[in-house]
Amino acid sequence: FVRAIPALLMPVIILGGILGGVCSPTEAASVAILYSIIVGVFYYRSLNLKILVDCMVKAMIQSGAVLLIAAVACPVGWLVAMGKVPVILAAFITSVTTNKFIVLLLINIFLLILGCGIDANVSLLIFAPILAPLAVSLGVHPIHFAIIFILNITIGLATPPYGVCLFIGSSIAKIPLSRTMKAVIPFCLVEIAVLLLTTYVPAIALAVPRMLGLI
Image (cartoon, rainbow, N blue to C red; front, side, top):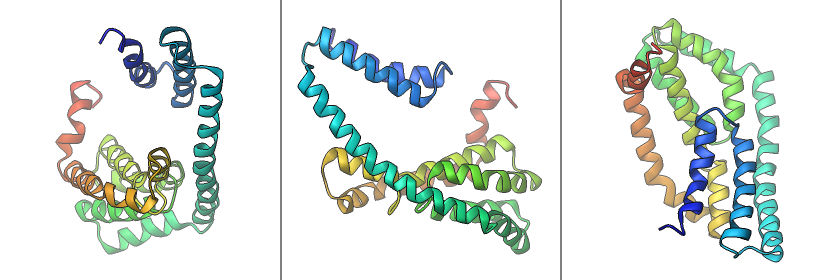
C-alpha cells in the first residue's frame, strides 16, 4: 500500500487540480504526465527511454485517431450553425407545445441524437445559447437546465457511432469498436435513466447548489 501511494496520487492531482480551479483539464494532463515520468523513473525505477518513446508513439496514434474524428465534427458543426438549425429547432419546439416537461423531453431527445454525431464542445457552443433561454422562459432554473444539457452531451461521448470515448476505449483495450459499442449499451441506458430523473425531479439537480447557497 505504501509503495502504491505515489501512483494513487495521480487521480488526486488531476481531479484536484481541475475541480479546485488550479488548472484546466489540458494543463492537468500535462502535469500528470510530468509527474508520472518523475515517479516512474526515480521512484519505481521501471521507466526507461525505450518505454517512454513507446508510450509517446502509442499516445500519438490514439490522439491522432480522436483528432481525425474531431476534425470531421467541426465542419458538421459549422454547417449546423450556418443552416440556423438551433433557431429552427427552438421555433419548432415552441410551435408544438409550451409545456415545459414536454419541451425538456424534446430537448433531451434532440441532444441525445445530436450527441451520436457531433462533438460535445460543438453542441455546447452552438445549441446552449439558443436552448437555454427557451427553457428558462418556460420556468426551468438556469442551473437545472445547465446540468441537463451537460448530462446529455456527456452521454453523447459514449454513444455510437461518433462517441469519442468509444474510440479511445477500444483503442486502449485493443478490441473492435463494435464490441465496445455493445458493452456500453447497459451503461448508456442507466445514464439515460439518471438524465430523466434529473430532468423531472429538479430537487436532485439543485440539491448541491442549494447546499452551497448558490440559489
